[in-house]
Length: 276
Image (cartoon, rainbow, N blue to C red; front, top):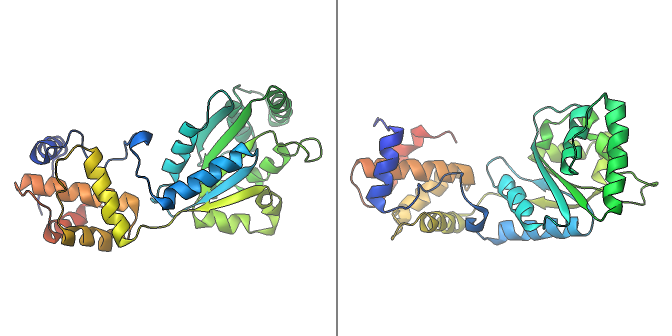
């Protein structure tokens, strides 16, 4: 198996194919994101949900672009009206969750949980009266304890549920769907005005996505033949993260071998280097 060295392969890759930046990395500016109905439609619906002072959910398999959706949502909502805060969850306590919501509202809270909770309710009410909308983007919510998640119901219950003072976007995989379908979380589920879902790419969409990533990386030509893009789709099954990893490793191997166009054999050779 050919050994790939990181620094040399990056330099060879850019020089060999004429890229201005390394393609297929996760470091992609929002302005350069791939525009497709499978992303633009959920994004528009979530933005409209927040603009209507409500909350929503993003359900997506791992590696299908939900974090990009959240980043784009954050970039599109004007700072003059919204206070957005992104949290990638592992295991938050009730107190930690309240602090994160406080940060979304623009202030830091400290103290024991009951004190933090009461302070947060007061601050959220004041922020609402000032015309500012805190928005909390919670990623990987399937890892949150259901007990902690129920705290969101209490925090969104103002004046007997007559005031919506914070918008939530809960993002996660299908485990989150199962969590929200449980009877104990029905009050949370009923507060979600829209559920957006992302899916794996089709064969044609995989090729379009690869062409876009090559174009924004500055290459003068598309360095994959049609059978290579088919191979990337067959192996990745349309998972964005897997497409990126497999395509980049294929290009690195081609650069090492001084090959100008990636064919299916290079994609197959790159397969052991990526976790799919």
